[in-house]
Amino acid sequence: MYKISKQFSFSASHILNLLGKDHPCARMHGHNYVVTVHLKSDTLDEYGFVKDYKSLKFIKRYINETLDHRHLNEIMPDHPTSENIARFLFERFKTEIPELYAIEVSETPQTSCFYEP
Image (tube, rainbow, N blue to C red; front, side):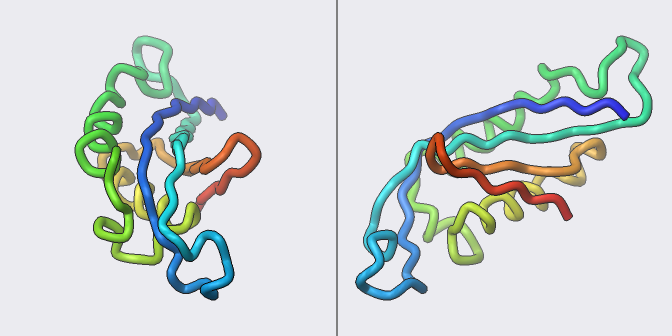
């Protein structure tokens, strides 16, 4: 099994309004998110790749146009936690990237969420 990953980043705000008013994340705040897409395949293509990294440029374009410097509560269909952001992005890209098996979202250098259906 071959596994590769590529990172993308964006900055955005959110409010985790399902938390109690005393929780700091219930107030509007922002993060410098890092999104890592994880791909795997049993075989390599004719160039020796699982997937050419250049072919993933459309992910950066989507992130820049849809998520970067936005308020995620206005974009996400669910409560914009790291877990829901990871699932949201996985569902958005799975049909275009059959090799995709997981999305990882990090809000801080010390935290990350790994979504693998």
